[in-house]
Image (cartoon, rainbow, N blue to C red; front, side, top):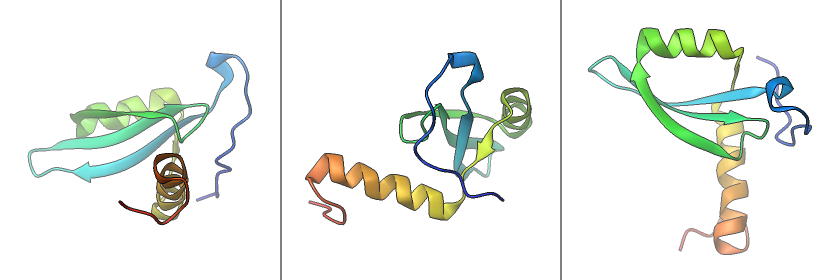
Length: 89
């Protein structure tokens, strides 16, 4: 998998890259994931059946973020939440 820059280029919504970060594959067949357009740090959480998720990813031509990229996003969020990375309270 190619490493994705977390600083996406701005442009028309239709031309912006879409990102998926898989959070959980549940025992009942549903998956929980984050979906972002243009900037993987600004996402919404979605849940859907596995087949629908696969179709959603294919139709949106998503880039799947790996664990390391997800941790990088989480560290960046800590900066905004607590003023510096690594602070959890």
